Image 1 (spheres, rainbow, N blue to C red):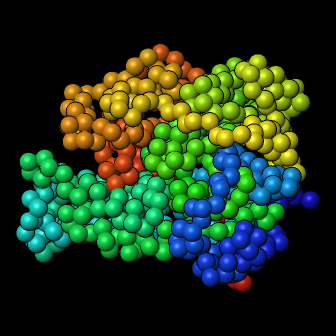
Image 2: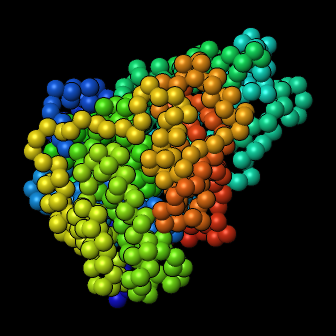
Length: 560
């Protein structure tokens, strides 16, 4: 009998009505905004009343540097949450919402996999509660108001050559990366170069996920710098009087989305900034709410510990006061063999020597999480059917030589039952005492250049950083304008510690070139673009969309 697909497993799930899931958390009916029987938003007024409750323990799931073989970070997050529930703990998970671009592109769905998924899977992957649509409309409204202001006299003296705000779309479309707007005559505005980003790369998405309240959201939206005047002064969304309407569009979306896992563990799925462009974590509002509602909250940060986990610590932690009590580093035999030089097609073949060569990647992530971020950690070995006992034994032994525990987990095939040993180790790491003080990669009062160098040398293993004269001048200007107090958000390839995606393992001595600097004043970070990175991906030769369909009775098929 053929193994069921992820969507077939999800569609066979026995879901509880969402009001029952909410009731188990102590959420009353009047605090729910239902979207059908199995998903709902939790009202913002109810969240504001949770502050008096004690906070639970926060577990951060991260991983080795990603490979085409996949590591299963989201699947592990879900499996761990289910395992904690099976052990009698009151647990919740917090995840990002999937973006339609990757869903229709190469990656496919992003709601977990196998028997460790959040459901209703097809709803979560396709539109969900409309949050991303609202973020797209708010972003594009601001773009329209910029061009409208220029058309009607340009009272703010905006330099049309220095408009930095771009429109967005939640579909991968390479044809829209670079565009010219305003063509067709004077009635259509002033022609200028522009382009589109994917929704999850927008500053509005980052703001949405860092805001702590509706008032904070509106203030952050107002601080967005959209352009410069002819004498280089910043022009903000508040100057254009756009932030109030943007906040109105986002009001309902800001409420976190409540769903459940296959095993009925409550899950908040909310927000979704890219981790190799923005900060790569679900919303602060959702994580904070979960911590007041549960004893253990499991969340993830995008990509490896050098990108997502660093940003959770240095950006999210600083902005919100959320700090992890323990971390889980997800690794697979296949990923480490890939970092050891094995071609993708040959990964199913046993190769202990290649695995041991690739261990340098995992070892650096362990050192970073434990020694740079100061977090107790465990390595979760996401076991696959074609992993051999010899490979798994070699991986466990190598991890233990690094001074941390390695736990084999089979949640993909067995659900929460397959991750109970991992859950026990996480409980042990979290302990019973007060949480330790947060540790950051760099000091708040360091300059932007010093912050970027600290990340490159302490996390990426680089010898130094470099930048052109123009980029250095831009950094000095941002420093002089008061933005030097912001943390740094690095935009670079997720596939390597370096800026070369082909350089696996754990390279050292390389120099990280800061190619471009972007101010995200509303999100309150400065983006350092290193290497080649795109904010509007393209579709592969055969996109995942070509396999997705709907039957005559309305059932979605072919989705992941």
